[in-house]
Image (cartoon, rainbow, N blue to C red; front, side):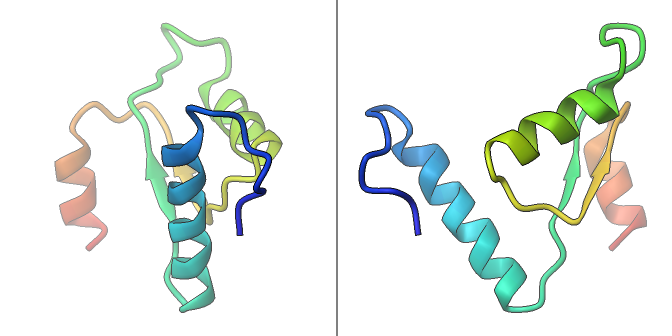
Length: 77
């Protein structure tokens, strides 16, 4: 799925994008949880959203301002 002309060093990112796409195709939801917060970033949600869409990284939901990701994951199953 990744372009053959991807720059060197982007192989891992390219493979991750392929995995995310395959997971979505198989009916899974991609929920990205980040510790980016409003103290360190002007707009962590939109900055993350723009990065993901610009780089064609598939996702269904973004959750920002979360330092204890394991707790959120447990709560959301």
